[in-house]
Image (cartoon, rainbow, N blue to C red; front, side, top):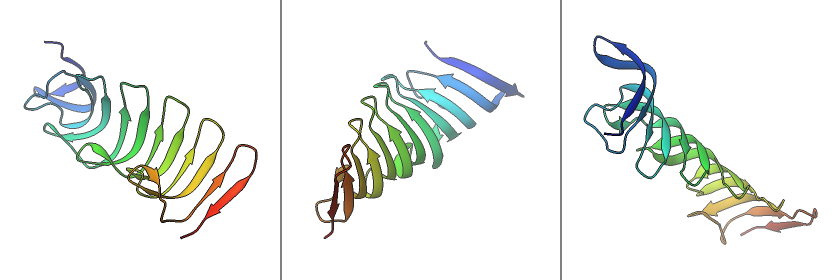
Length: 140
């Protein structure tokens, strides 16, 4: 059925560090730490309880090639994390880019400041440093 499990077993129960791939969620997928790859090609490494991700630190490798390391709630980025995008941009801060964060863009520009819903906050504070060294400060 396309499922693959690599890891340890004890008394017919999966345990320890494992790698598990499936195109469907199954009843007792992983207990403890594991990796699950969904049908879209996104791989999530973290702690599982039954078939549910446990809130905490995770590594997510998206099918697009982008990756996220940081806090997750309900299996999704939430809290502090770092996302490296395939275009070379790197965002470090509160997720989902709401709150304080730093983004180093592939073109060399760096924005450090407040974000709202994945965008630079137009009502917040921040500093944009251009690749040529020019600095723009924003304060609301």
